[in-house]
Length: 186
Image (cartoon, rainbow, N blue to C red; front, side):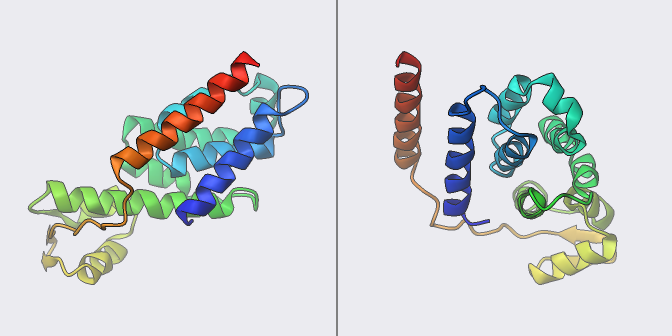
């Protein structure tokens, strides 16, 4: 998912939750918002969302519990379990978000491997990325990393220059906080 699409979706879903006449929204909205928080790797907001979802909504929607299971595994940094939890058949409401989350988690794992390891076994890489050994081998070759039998020797991944500056993030966060406080005061 493109960053602008994700931010727009988050804003729409958060607004729907805040403006809900009964104080709660449908399980579909909660599921999408929880999935987007996980996609953004915003585990704190995901956890707080889970805590404020009414118990009857949680018990009435199995998919919502499955999404939270992914979040719990992410919180514990149990990457093989994250990939196992992601390998489900998702409803149309969250399928594209969960697919994007799966790709995002895989790319973060590959980036971590490139930064933290000088060598590791192909089976460990496969477990960290949720791929079969054959898929992991192809990923290694696609990135130009060296592979000696079953030992992977990663190269550092060049960081993209398109990431926003910390000042931009801080200003955005301050703006959201101001809006939230203003909402609470009114």
